[in-house]
Amino acid sequence: MLAPNLQSFASGAGAATEIFATIDRVPVIDSSSTEGIKLDKVQGTIELKDLDFIYPARPSVQVLYGFNGIFPHGKMTALVGGSGSGKSTIIGLIERF
Image 1 (tube, rainbow, N blue to C red):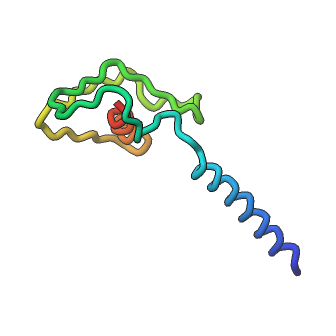
Image 2 (cartoon, rainbow, N blue to C red):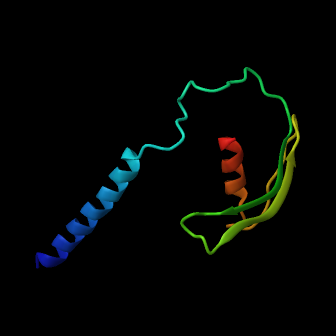
């Protein structure tokens, strides 16, 4: 009667190891770094041209194919599309810019 419970504990310990490895991971980009140019104020248009994107974990699935987009200063722009069409990816890439 103990075997099924031990299996659950082993699965939980394995999952916890992966979670702690993710928490302890040091990202390549240091978001708290003070190096580089830091602008006081940014006003401008963001333009993406011929953007292709593939997730490294899923190289057989291309998320974006030649995406073009203009995000004008002072305007609100909506990204609309089905699940998995790259909306969050575009925002993530702009945020890292």
